[in-house]
Length: 219
Image (cartoon, rainbow, N blue to C red):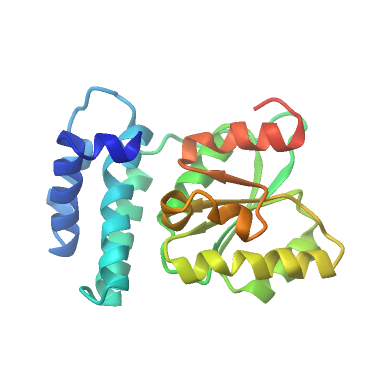
């Protein structure tokens, strides 16, 4: 659905937002993100505008059209704007699985930030590991006894490393579910299975339902 909507007004808006990011024009980006929309939902607007823009920036970097510094600065601007838009988090409630969130050897933190906000607002206990390498992520998951790992990626090489996380956890005897998300998995819908993940989310708002499905609990 996201790809179809980009062909219309949302696609034009996302490209304008992308241009503002690459120009480091935070004020223009903020105005576009805060403009009233037909959904009235800050999370949906982020998913409609910010994520497509950052995905295009990531692809352009992979093609050699942009510098890594442009990817980094675009992400930092978006993280600051998203922090202002996302709802306040709620205290954990009920018996919920403990979730570990990580960006795997990647510089794109926005997707993880959005999932974190959604899960905290839904009452989950979340361990935010930030940017991790494979060995470090496996070590922390084993040491802290988390119940599920959620990994966000922007670049394909990072997505492929999820297979090594699965292998490392298996060697350690920790067969916890792994949920993945990010551009590589949306572009190739078979990729999440190929790297040994248990599920793939197309948007942050899907995270509670995915957890419920994998654990047999209520979202």
